Amino acid sequence: MDSIRPLKKCVLLLAVAGAVAAWWLLMAPASLGGPATYVMVSGKSMLPTLHEGDLAVLHEQASYSPGDVVAFRVPEGDPGEGAIVIHRIAGGSPRDGFVMQGDNKNDPDPWRPTQDNVLGKMWFHVPGAGRALAILQAPLPLATLVGWAAMLMVALGGRPARHRDAPAPAGGARSAAKGGGKV
Image 1: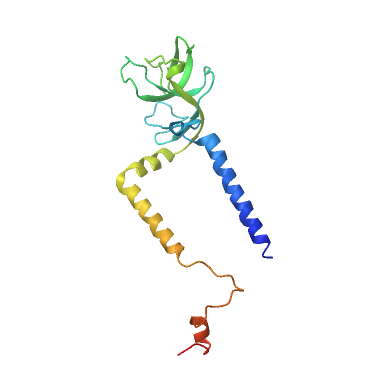
Image 2: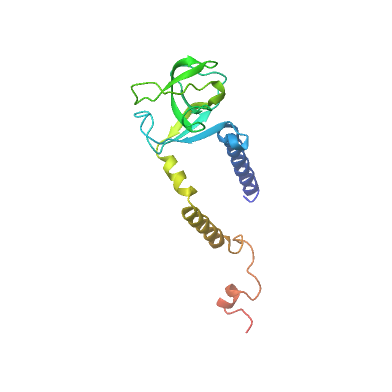
């Protein structure tokens, strides 16, 4: 029975390591060398596909096509230059610039981002997750979360657990309660 415990620990450790590796390969932020870009949606231009506060996860592609929902940086020299916009490709070309349009817009955008301006194609989105992340970026909620995590670690840290079969410490509370302790 005791030989199974190390095996369970090893399997659990391998599962956790595998999950972390999979996350890194698929979801690590581009700013840390990973493949994913995260964009919080603001505004109503992509309704009904995306709503304000949604979190869009994007992956860079070798090429993009009309119909793809992509995030791009507004090109230099254009109004709003450097801002990140998430819209659908309506036409154009990677070299001359894509024609972009929000799903909830009647007209195309004034910007014509090239392939170099595109951050990635939307892989999936998580409704409302952007709001939660925005709240956590504020100092007070972040400090509160860290404080609660620290208190939880201290509370759960305690003394290491003893195996059921291990003898009680000599003169400890267990033997004193049975009347066998030293006085």
